[in-house]
Image (tube, rainbow, N blue to C red; front, top):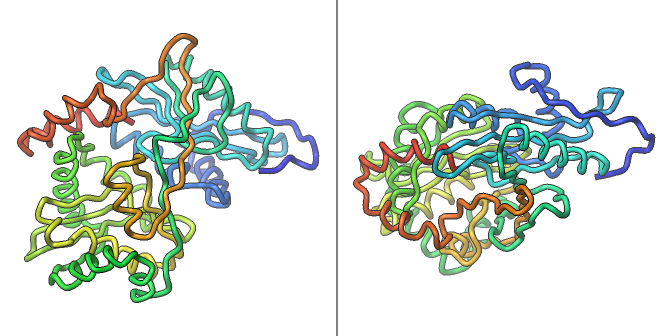
Length: 357
């Protein structure tokens, strides 16, 4: 971020996300910013709003000459179980204030909190970006982000992976599994089937199927699905986003059979190849909680975890909402969810997950 050479007045406004021109201007600002993620894009917020029945907002800091100085995309989330919150951004691992100039940060944070109060959201969350100070509560220990550059070809990619994980990938390659990448209904259906099983086994509710359809609709060619099959049956799948030559594998998982088949290993290795063929130069493996199995899995692929910086705010004397499934308060619920029949988890999950954000 920089300080403007001329002190041009700065104003704040709410974006009209139904206006194609306003969305296009914000999207262009996001794509040109070096710290941007897909979770800052209007496409993300619009897909989340329709897919999960929430409301999308976006605050814009703008110069009198029309230059965008910063944005704050926000998702208004309401849930009988998990409460209300204003999140930047909903269902994303990134977001927060995206500013081209330092003087846009504090006004956007203040305006965001004022909006949270007007909407009666007792918690506001910023997932990344420049973080305001007190009374905001910051967290730099819960989550790690994993990203690294892609290698030039398959052999170089294998060489970049530690030896033990490299052997697992080779087993997946040799297993005779089929890989398909696309955006059509059959891969979407197979991905949802696999993903639903995966998250049930982890003890968390699955998102509504409409969410994934809306993501593909909004992102167009900047999103796709890769599915791994054994004998025509899907055993692993991942929905990925693409932006500025970076691939973001986001919603991925595998069935219980995927483990001994090394289908997850093949899936991510095949995605690296697919991303290179699309012109990507970097692989963003997303976030994982510190000290967990998923974090160790990503480290085994040659990714170094970097602390992610988040912030929350609640009214004075109140605690922000807590939705971390590793929290002791959710231990019994997670254990019980793992035992649900898949049909029941798929029926109940979307009703609960759309309020998590």
